Length: 190
View 1: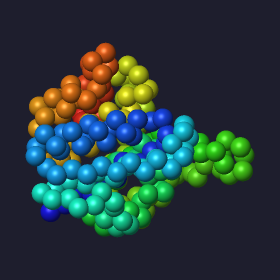
View 2: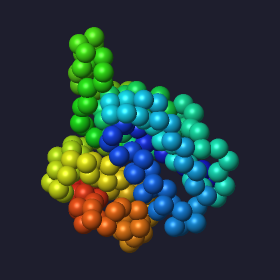
View 3: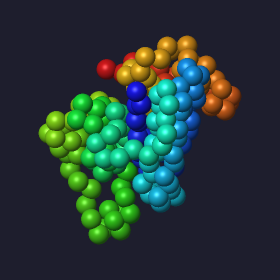
View 4: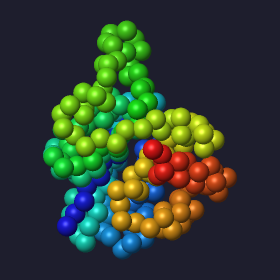
């Protein structure tokens, strides 16, 4: 049985590190793991998506519409953009942070209002939290990615010990304590 996770966000948010932490945790449990990074406009501000598939045997890393068991969204508009990829009974974990895309910055468009509420109205199973506030509490706004991984950990049968060891082997040592705090804040947020 293969599980499909999409990590979606905006360039510069740390989606690639998040996919590495998740991939490494799954590899440590002897799953076959495939990760595909689709950069798009990966400079700051552009949409970025990473596919993480795991199971006993994974043939292709690509996830089609309606196949994602979990979407981990680093930003509200990206959650809405990739929602068609979520399975009917899938889980959408979303950072409530809003990052204006280029059309909004240039004044050509307006950022849609009440995105999270509109997503919930579709019947999607949404776990939304302010990951930016938690990342800042951990010590850096750049820790949003690890706050989200902490939140994601609640939906996996992976021990906290495995997550901690994965952080230790994946995150640079000078940022380790801050990232451990970010993970814990994301995992335990109300």
